[in-house]
Amino acid sequence: MGRDARYGILEGEKVQELRGDLFDHSPAGTTHALAEVKLLAPCVPGKILAVGLNYRSHLGNRPAPSAPEIFYKPLSCLQNPGDPIVIPLDANNVHSEGELVIVIGKTAKNISADEARAAIFGVTCGNDVSERDWQHGAHKDLQWWRAKGADTFGPLGPAIVAGVDDSNLMLETRINGETVQKQSTSDLLFDCPAIVSYVSRWVTLEPGDVIYTGTPGATRKMNRGDIVEVEIEKIGVLRNPVA
Image 1: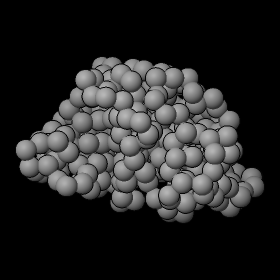
Image 2 (image 1 turned 180 degrees about the horizontal axis):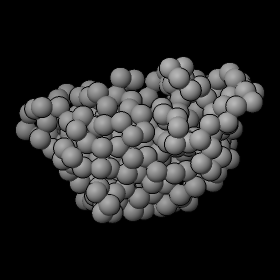
Image 3 (image 1 turned 90 degrees about the vertical axis):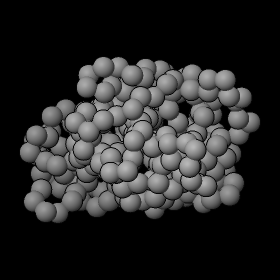
């Protein structure tokens, strides 16, 4: 597609190019081989939110939250499928966190969980990369602005899937082919509509905004040279090298 970014519909090993944007488009009449295009993060969000402690298997000895625990990730943390997660020079304990990510399709303000379902455009794969020492260590920051928001700490993709039942999808994270996380989204404490409804009480969600929904089980440190894959059933594989 040259230097110009385009939206497209992924159909097996081919991409049907679209005219327009993610929410208002028509076929451009051109089809590309998937191997011949560069996939970018599949949307351009106005904001990125994320949920902490949202899988039963991730709680450990911590009490379950009574409401979704929300935080922000900066837009500058986004990374494309296939592009490197760059570990900062002074970071020593960077973990991958495979996650289901919500993509908002309609403006949502103070909506119910039932209304929230209609506001969700689709879901994709994400990696909420986290530097644990900056997050929880002896010299932790007041907020997670760099622990979860450093450049490239938000890989997203490879594609958005609409119309899928996101309440029971198998999520698997692999480092160098070894499975380090594997859990169904049925283990979520707060499902996608509950999260969207809750956030919308205070923050208006706009089309293209994304919400990382939390990570299951235990996470593992990544090292430079690793390959990290987040695979979610019916969505695909988000693969990034670590540099």
